[in-house]
Image 1 (tube, rainbow, N blue to C red):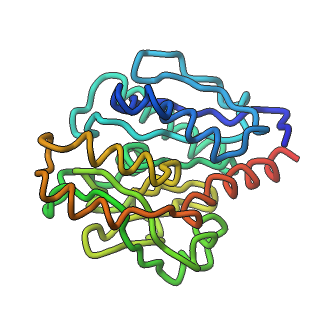
Image 2: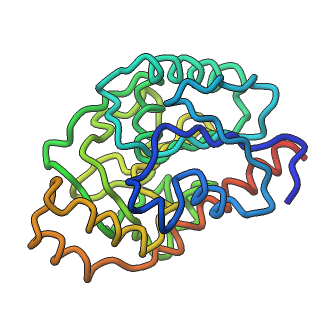
Length: 243
C-alpha cells in the first residue's frame, strides 16, 4: 500500500530494554500492524522531536508509554495542543491513540484521566463492545472475538464531551472511544503479540506484580488477532482518505 503521504507514528516512550532487545519497540510493532508497505514517519515526541505539519500526513497513531498522562510533562502539553489542533482543523484525518496515546488524546479533548481505582490491569482480557462499537468503522473489526492485550495503571475515567464509548470491561468503563467520525482511542494494545505480552508480565515481576500474579496471568495470554486487525483497518481508512 503506497500513500502519497505517510502515517505519523508519534512515539511517546519506549518499552523495557530487555523487551526491545528481543522484539523491537512500540513503533516497529505498530508499523508491522499497519502493514509493512504502509509509509510511516516516526516522530519521537518524548525526546522533543518536532511535530510534523498537519498537511504532510495521511493519519496519526500515538503510541503507548511508561509515562503517566497526569505527570503533564512539557512535551505532553505540547503534543496535546498539536492533537487538539489536528482534530479540530483537519476533521477528516484518521487519528488513533493506543493506551497512553488513548489517554493523552482523551485529555486533550476534555476528558478525565487518572489512576484507575481498581489498580493495574494487565494480561489478555475480554472486552465488551457497545452497540456503537459493533457498528464502528474501526472497532467493528474485533466484534467476533473481543480479547485484547492490556497493561495500564491509569484510565480514561470520563470520556471527552461528545465522544462515543465503543468498548468496556469490568476493569475499565472506557476501553475505547470515538470522537467525531475519524478519531479513536483504545486502552488496549493491538500492537502487542502474545510473546510481547508474556515478556511484559515477566518484566513487571516485582515491579507491580507478585510472582503469584505473574504465574496466574501467564496461562491466560493468547494471540488477539481480531484486536490486532484494527491497525490494518486503520491503514485502510487512511488510504481511503488520501485516495
